[in-house]
Length: 161
Image (cartoon, rainbow, N blue to C red; front, side, top):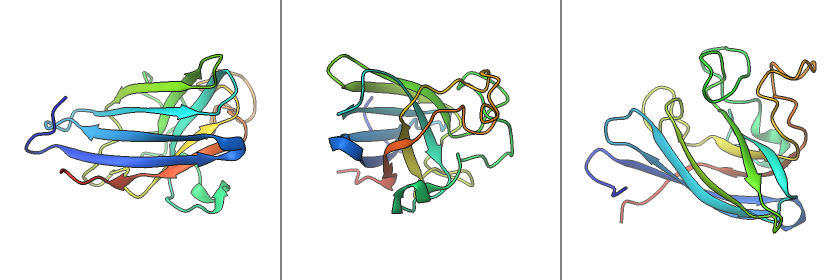
């Protein structure tokens, strides 16, 4: 999609353990209905990895200082298609046998402008699959029991040039 008037763009450089690297681009649709997240992350173990927006853009202690999932409406953890979910719950990304995850997600709860903007917050890739709040584990309703934080990046405003 072309960036036009009213379009806001963000970018995050992903850095993590064991040479996990990548970049993500965030493009807020001009009408504000959704943000499209695209990019590629390499160096992951093959399979599903929880993928979330966390509340803080603080990486002073690596990905552990990014705080909890971004949850301005104080809801339980869920799937991206659920009404009951954190704004930052983006489900799972899939790394192929080569450890590469190609990402293309459209979501209506992660704007780049307004009171619930994700700019300045962090995107985090987890070691394990997100159970989408349905796993029955004590962490299912808060984190999706997605395990350790293996990579993260701060979402910044991207130049429109």
